[in-house]
Length: 146
Image (cartoon, rainbow, N blue to C red):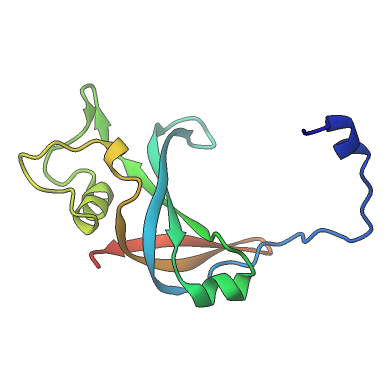
């Protein structure tokens, strides 16, 4: 049984890492772990919208060994076009979502689609790096069918 006080009182002598080692740039077999919608707002407050964060499990033994982790996750952020009815499904809108759906085989006209269908689906993911100050973050910049 978990004892919160014992956990808080436990002492360690080693230090913690302060930087994440990013997934190396490359293409990998990915499995969608989860999708999380989020609302965003520009720093000046003049723009708002909805984005979809797609969390991919990287299924590559070499990457797992390099990072020293059994579970390796990278995030893909997709900005969503919306209108009063919800997702804007008109021509030229939600291209990023369309590419994701195409990569996982869920972009067939006439077939129902919901975001709840995405976890567990697979695709080839292209991982790149984004540098912010002194930190390097791995992120999914593209997806394709396996």
